[in-house]
Image 1 (cartoon, one colour):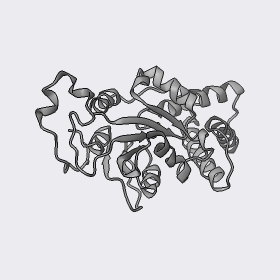
Image 2 (cartoon, helix red, strand yellow):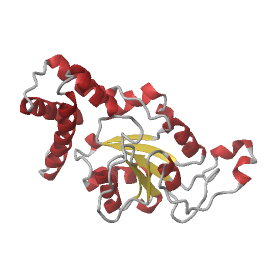
Image 3 (cartoon, helix red, strand yellow):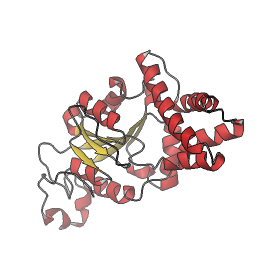
Amino acid sequence: MSDVPMTLSRRDAMGALALGAALLPTAGRAAPATAVDAIGFDGFPIFDPRPVGALAKRLFPERGEALAQQWNAKLFGYAWLYTAAGQYDGFDALADSALRYTAEALQIALTERDRNMLVGAYSELEAWPDVRPALMKLRAAGVRLAFLSNLSEATLRANMARSGITEMFEHVLSTDRVRQFKPARAAYGMALDAFALPKARIGFAAFGGWDAAGAAWFGYRTAWVNRLGVPREPIEPGPAFVGRGMDAVLALAGIA
């Protein structure tokens, strides 16, 4: 069950009267002052990352769960460390470094094939079941969409093609462009240049609570797609909308 606040007004049936209504910028959605005209997405509200951990468990049945959890933590630790130090390397390179460190710490013998399979799994993800219907609603309402992700553009495009959603997105913005991972301000700022809209008209859809906080600090109105039901970060300002699925993003755009 979603805990998205149902406080936004809804456009009446006007948008459904004309066959071409889906092409109009405001068709099918409300237009309150708080609605947004464009949304940047982290990768994981769209793509389900759980198969990466599932692969680790298949490769190493006894230690795979620990490997997956500690690898993930180390990977994001590296991303924040590199950004704080003014350094950069691509997501795949950091993922490989974090994987090698974690395997050694857990005394797991990884082959080169194991490493390639695990890192490569990030490019073989599929969209969550509720994604495509929600994206269609957003596009029909004239909301412009982009990825704004720490993943590489190649990884994002591979996953988009796999899920058949390539045509839904106007921009594919990887932090490779600015060589700073989120939550660096330059990373969030890519959407300003891409959409050529004021910050107040751009929303952001986060998978992690830390990413929702970073985007809110930057000034974006934010939806936290809390797919895994983890606790809310006690950081203000918090996300404007919170839900377990894309309903939170639809609320961000003022769509019923």
